[in-house]
Image (cartoon, rainbow, N blue to C red):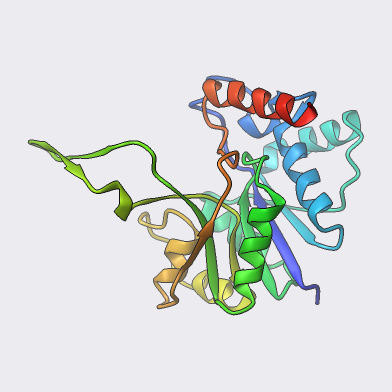
Length: 224
């Protein structure tokens, strides 16, 4: 059994990106987003067990770009399911780590410091999620009105979300339902308390064309 496993989810189809190519395969800084993410975790810890979930119809394409960009990071590919929930279930069957993290494949800029904070907190806790404070004012919208809410009572949730292996497995023994928005949500339903740690601002999820512009700026800054 290894100490750490990381499940990298890459099942998006890029609807909001406005491209035929899924967003995880778009090129930034000279290589596909997903390869950036894969290499980041390998550089963080060459011993970490990497499990990648991909839609079946894109597995062949993945093999092609691995060769094209000379990516040799050891990892296991498992088939994505109908929902993200089912993809994680498939990945858990291949995980052997005592601690399991789940990360969005289109978050290629999570810092080593954020990853460390998650795993270090997990030594004492059962479930750890990186978050950021909100900077903007918020308004809640109902059917008939809008009203201001206190932004200090809310956090932006990032990944990797990290769990003791037995905690995450127990959570995924529960049946799927549409209110499951992330892994922490599902774990919380089993009665486990979620511990929050600080994320890094660059840990954005690449979802829109504007996000790609930000990504290129982050890469250029890192090269300087």
